[in-house]
Every structure is written in structure tokens, then in C-alpha cells.
Image (cartoon, rainbow, N blue to C red; front, side, top):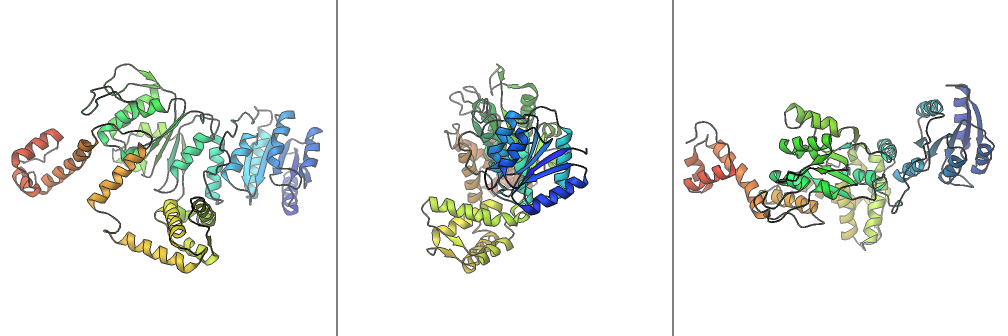
Length: 481
């Protein structure tokens, strides 16, 4: 689209010149200023078909100008540019009526494409019907100025006023729950509860009761009725973390709930209507699980309405200084002392591959803040801590790869998933069942189904083993005695 009148406000002369020339070559009439007051006068006088404005200007905050513009000219499209490339900047811009948010430095071709779309959208519904920032809007939930993070910020900002189901993928430790919380905290359901469920932390035979609740006597240990997470998240957001670990039976039931908008408790018969926004997350390759028959394809498409991929830290190394600064500030608030990392120390962090992603970086910074008394942290300290981390990762015993360590990690996730409430009763028996069943199955596999040999291997009486096989419903290989 050509021939439009475009108003530009930016205190950077170079940016004004570049935009003036580029938009002029595209056939547009451009008026440019270095301040917000002049921009306001032009808008108030009815000039301009489109506004492109910076946030930080000498006389006014561009974000504060947006509501005033939308009040008198609600159909005027506004593109906001900012070097303050944070999630809150993107959210505030969209909340206050911006058509699009563009971080600096910007790609000129992309900006010109956004201009064309904005001009084509003239006369459509107003963009300023957005939820307010709400309490806690100044708390920074996500950190980073890399291009990958900017894409995520813009996606989150666009989703604020919707109830679309979101699928967040990414390696462990990349901050998937932070994105889910941002979608809730800045969305239209923020007055409701944010309920998180980690599928990997719940015994597989209890996932349905966890999600949908249960009636008294529905299963062993259910001495009273229990409320499920769908009920707790009513009018709010339900975050289904590690959705790839959900058993197929539970997947089928979840799909039915998503299709019909209602569920029944385990052991119950009365349908219960549900009104929740679903955000799911996984570190698995769900398409690979679908090919293996371990994840329902129809459920995948129900959940993957808006996909968000979180990059591993090794793909956004430029964000490490901002992340380190944030973690050091948090450590100082906790009384661990004020610390500053020198540039060579930051460079050492940017050379590391970070297999544990942001969680690993945070742990390292907290360890440095707690163990070192000096305020200025140099490269030597950082490299020593990184070397220690490498040694721990390469040593199976130190990395706590033992059975006890695995059980401890599993239970830690389980209790974290129930941090606000007492878990369902019968935990002892459920943990023993989860350990016993694979132990007996693998022993029978090793003895080719010979139960007498398996009993000797396990140190059990043969009759005891038979009873456990029956009670635990262990599948015995062919030819077993």
C-alpha cells in the first residue's frame, strides 16, 4: 500500500533519517520529529494515517502517549519501537493500544512489512481493548534482549487478550513455567488461579485423580473425596507441565474434556463444567512420541494451537549478562551480599555450553554469591566453579545418578507440585509400587521369564513373587514357569 501519511517520533536522528528515506521510497509521505509533544500536536490536528514512535524521548514517555492518542483517534494504528527490549515493554505497548511492538535494533525490511500490514488494517476494530497491567506488572518475569526472546515477548503480548491454548516446548531449565505464568499474570484470567501440574512428578496411576478429583473410596487410600486441578483452576489457567509424560489413558480423558468442556471425578458420575485456559509444556519431541504411539496425535493438535519454543541458553548467549545481573540482585535481596562480575568473568560464562540452561546458570551465580566474600568476582572464580560443575556432571556418583538419588528427585518434583496442599494419602504404598513393578519386570526379563530364578535374584520366596506379579499386574514373558 502506498501514498499514506506516516508520523515518526524518535530522538535518534539516524533512525529518523533511515525511516524517512525507506518509507519515502515506498511512496509514503513522512513527517518526523524528535519529541512527543510535536507528535501529539500532529495527531490532535488529524494528521497521519500511521504513527511510529519511540518509547524514550526527551519530553515524554511514548507509552504514556498511546492512551491519549487512542482516546481521540481510536482507529489510528501505532507502531512502538524501543531499545528497552523487555517483556514488560512489549506488554505495556500492546495493553495501551499499539498495533505492533518492534525492538531496537530492528530489521528494516521487517518494519516495512509491519507498516504495510498496519496500513492495510486501517478501519478495523480498535487495538486498545486490552486488559490492564494489574498488580505486580513491574515484576520482570522473563529476561533477555536476544532476537529469540523478543519473538517470545511479542507472542506473549499478542496472546494476552485471548484464551487460546498454548504449547511451550524447550529443554529442561529454559523457563517454560515462567512463560506460562506470564501468559496468566498479564492475561484476562489473571484474577483466577494459576494451577501448575507436573506430569512427571505424579504417579501414573494417580494422574487422572490429580487432574479431575476423586470420590471417597475411588481407589486404595482414598479415605475422603479430593478436589482436582481442573476444579482449582476454574476461571483461571491450568499449566500442564511435562505433558509428554502423561499416560495414554489420561491423554484420552484429557482430550474428551477439551472437546466437551466438562469432566467427571474418578469414581463420580455427575459431569462438571470446566472453564479454564490450558497451557501445556514439554521437553520431549511430541511428534516423535506420536510416531512411537506414546502420544495421541489428536490431543497434540488440541494443545498445539499456539506453539512457543523456548531456546536453550546456548542459543541466546548475549542474554547472559542481563541474567547474571538479575540473579545477583536477587541474591543481594536475600542477604548473600552485593557482587559484580568483571567482563572476563562474563566472557567465561558465555563460552560454556550450559546443558542445564538458565537453571544451571542461576545455581552457579547463587553459589558464587554465597561462598565468596569478595564483591568483585573475576574470571578465576568463575572458571573454577565451571570446572567443578563439569566434574560433577561427568561423575555418576557425584551427580547422584543412584536409585536413591532418582527417587529423591522424583519425590522432590512431586512435593513441589503439591507445595500448596497435602498430597493424596497412600504415598508410601504408591512409591513402593512404582519401584517394585519395573524391578520385577526387568528381573523376569533377565531370567527369560523363569520365576524361580527371578525370585532367587530378588531374594524373595517364589510364592511371594507370584503374589506380587498378580497384585502389580506384571506382564510375564512367554515361557515363564
